[in-house]
Amino acid sequence: MTIKKIFNNNAALATDEQGNEVIYTGCGICFQKKCGDSLDESKIEKTFVMEKANEQFMKLVSELPYEEIQVADEIIQYASTHLNKRLCNNIYITLTDHLGFAIERSKSGTVLKNKLLWEIKKYYGPEFIIGKHALDIVKERLNVELPEDEAGFFALHIVNAELDGNIHHTMESPEVIDDIVNIVRFTYKTDLDEQSLSYERFITHLKYFLQRAEKKVYYQPDDGELFDIVKNKFPEAYRCASRIKSYMEAKYPDEITDEEMLYLTVHISRITTGRNN
Image (tube, rainbow, N blue to C red; front, side, top):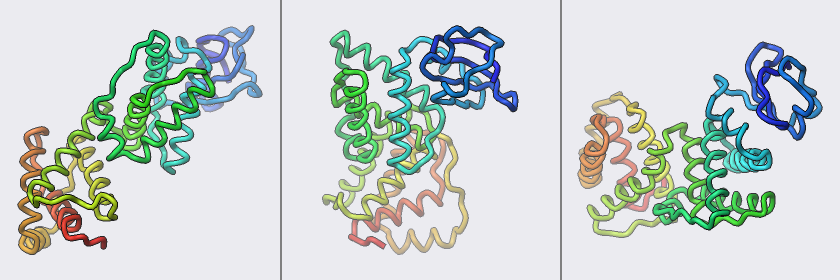
């Protein structure tokens, strides 16, 4: 592993055996080293393999204290393990960057209020719990106590990495989900059983529905006959889905496909009739 660029004593850009550019970190990994030297493999603690050596991440590695890089990695690994999901590499940039600014804000006594905290707790429960644990990691490792608002922000970065989406869109999603759920409540003039399996499935469907809307890749029409059957069998649910379609098409430029409407109609029928199958 030949060093191409030294960021600080603890991080370097080097080439691996296959000639790929990789960022290596480890305590004192670059001490008394220069470009062209080989890295001591025994000192490598973390390897960051990006599709390309990302300039933004390299900037973070060179500017942030090594301890903060380690904490960000610990949070990410904890999230991946407890969600049992592979998170997209971009989280190493977004969450690490956010952590650095959160610590700066804390030291200056500045609190950034999370206006979506209630929605995040409600619709992204597992990710919020991980965000809360992240606060414990930060306090234990860095002796910095961050407010609960930051747990919500960490949760959104984790959600974004799960869906491999755009962080600005992800930050908007809890409010959109809340609007859609309220459309269902208004249409049926009833509360929904938020503890039911049908409700959980509906919220999960909406998360991926919004991801498809952002990427403009909706379910494509497959069986028009099945859609007609569902539409006629569940007219009230279809009417509700049509209201959601109007709401979504006002926010996103593309038309919602019949296939998307089919799934929305079925989910709405289930959560409003108490069916869990």
